[in-house]
Length: 465
Image (cartoon, rainbow, N blue to C red; front, side, top):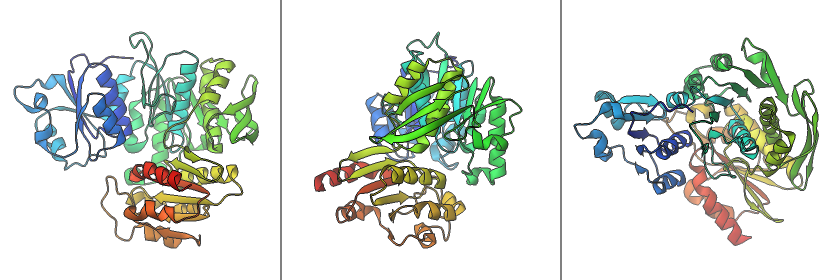
């Protein structure tokens, strides 16, 4: 990996608690840089960063910036400010850094600099990129290729979103999740690129689906060696190069699955590759959509000449990613799964996978919509996906970086849904309400602060079952 930060002694993060930002913070902390930062709210992730020796505060206030950064005389060339686009332009600390001529870079720019001269495998897509990139990293680790990896979730196997090679000076193999938000992935020039899906999202940034697909095409053109695409999106990506395709069930793809079945709650299947067939594969992760993610990861592994033995072992031992089909309770009487799904297609994939695994059980879901603009743009699709549930509880919309939009709220979604058993519950009443419900399979779904309810819900369910 290229070390292009020799003169940088101190790094300050605006939005340090984000999953991508925290991976960079951990990276620079491991590199021996002095790391500190701001985030809007405390979280389990910021608690972990603080425990790792990183100074974090939660008030937008210039006086909380470390004196080593803001007190004159300071050396501007030795200080780097990294921010996420989720930080508003009127943020007082961001304004301070801009007015005082600090070097300020977006997270994606810095990731691009770190991986500039690396053998990078980048995974992009509206859905599936976190699980796919994490699985690729796990396959490489199993094959003792000793990769580094910047991931968009906390892996169950390694309990972190950052993996570092034991020898950074000689091993330049890096796996990264390529984020499409704000066209961030255009800072990357990977050797191998994977695109899992190009469903419309982030229309508050892109404006329309066509512009978003154009951005994916630009990313595809930046791939230096091999471009791997899900079979059904080939015609939507203009890469100008030969592509390798994968699918969960399309036999026209270069890599696909066949004879898929569920055995003791786990998927068992065969993987057809251009050269041979991997028989009797077991995936340690539930969900048919994750079978498809595994095919993408296997395509990368095979193109990198990883042995079938290592691929087989990695798929079987992969524990998944926290908040991706994440079992919290799994007993004969009750199943509770937490999932990050926040797009209609993700909701549909998760709910359908649960229904396939538990065909005779009542499926209850709690969904917290994420962003007013996304809720507005995909309201009908959200309603159709949520109607797949037997019972639905809606929380109010998590605004994240946005201000409210008139007429856009959870009641709007509720009114569009055809499901009979549906209602809105306020945060303060959620856990208590669940105690009175007859639950068989429960899902918590969303990308906002619904994750802060997972532990209280789990504890309450275990006490009452």
